Image (cartoon, rainbow, N blue to C red; front, side, top):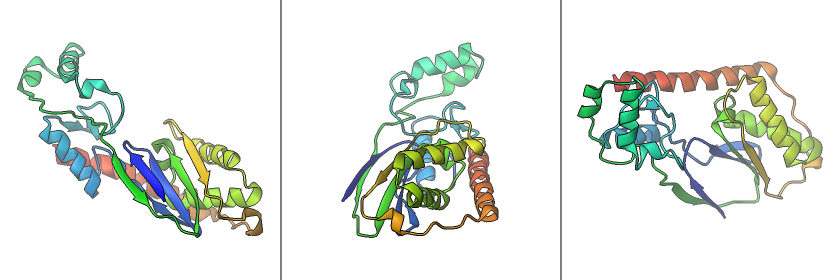
Amino acid sequence: MLFISHLGDSAVALSRSGKDEVLTDSHRPYGNNKVSLEEIRRIREAGGWIVNGRICGDISVSRAFGDIRFKTKKDEMLKKGVEEGRWSEKFASRIQLKGDLVTSFPDVFQVALGSDDEFIVLASDGLWDYMNSSEAVRFVRNHLRQHGDVQMASEALAQMALNRRSQDNVSIVIADLGRTDWRSLPVEQQNVVYEFGQALATISLVSLGIWMSTLLAS
């Protein structure tokens, strides 16, 4: 059994016989999926607003540790925004903040693991914004087939994200569940055209989500 406590925009993907399954939902203030829409509603009910996919035009994640300016120091955040010229004093006077705009309340759940479950990829959005889970699982699986070393696979996966011009923090942990004899499996051939198309699709979806949240906020 796998127990997960998750918040923020990192994500966990599971490989089941080479098929990817994303186990978490990113907590972001943009997008049109169910979780994002719930986060947007919660933020607005707390008195916050969203600009270009960012809470108060600042942060693009809706659940996180820290970020106290969106929790117990919201009044100071409003005052600082006036001082920095980000909004007017008149605008700030109309804002009534009734709750935390960013919360540290996690999603907690469990996943039953079977004999076909191979490994888990836990990574920050510096990876997932530039590579989808299907491609990441295939990439890691091929590396484990070659050498069976999760550290080497993690470093290679991070380098792939950097090669795609990821500008964000790229943190990756790969957990081999110990159910697979990697060296007995043949290495899959890479389809460069397919992978390039997948990368473009992933980046396009992120951009579309930010654009749609901006429309909803206007």
